[in-house]
Length: 329
Image 1 (cartoon, one colour):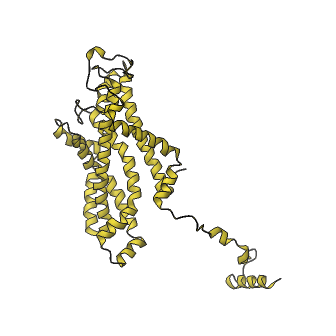
Image 2 (cartoon, helix red, strand yellow):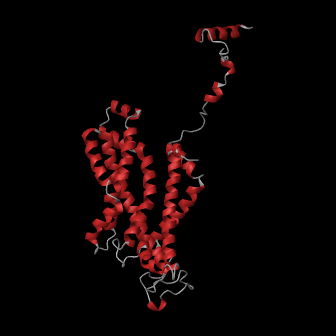
Image 3 (cartoon, helix red, strand yellow):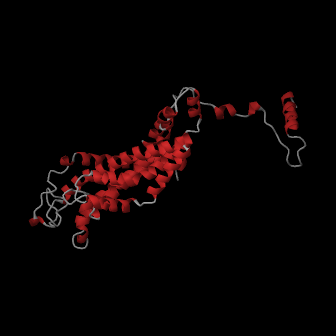
């Protein structure tokens, strides 16, 4: 037995004295343990941020690619509807009522003789605009409330949390129905956007508060405070940027929810008036034709379903990329 083996056995006797029968321990020599290979780091690879790693994951995810393509197509249709449909969606002729599709009018005509294809294309602008604007306002307002509550804590957190609980107890659609009854004569999209924002900011505030509570106890906040940074500077310069991941995921997945909410309100007849082209209004108008002419109902419903599905799938892909621990497979 060589000298190194005797030294290892002596170390084993020091650290693990008097083992019971069958429990003898062996300490491998350091030169036989490949710790250097296991713990080695390739210093030639440039460091990457969380966002770079997330983008690297997203661009390899087929779910994200498909949903992003669908979302881009929907946004292009909403921004430039005249490039996809030249027919005026409000130009209707009763002589074309419920006529099937023909060249230039692939989806046929509805009960009033309006071109269904043109109304589906132009309806995207209304629904997508309301969804995007509502998501932006909800993210800004709810994120700010949640960040302030989580960062300052104490009575500030208590007051804002109780206000959040009050709004959380009110169902969004029910609250919107009651509030919109006062603005039934208005044709502005902002009445829908502000109403959905009023009842939809609660979840965003709760998510942001949780993220800020976690981030403010990390070392970078303590180091910044020790260097003389003010609390507000810490909040907006360090903590909020490091809390954006769950906020972005929540915003992406909520976009489809607000599009559905607008369609639901228009379907119930208390959202946008009939003079504004929207998917929800067309679905409401065509519901009585389900048994006789289902295609009139199918096309706006399919456009709504595809749009919502695209944003929900994108939200799932973004969630997996920014929070790998939440992956289910």
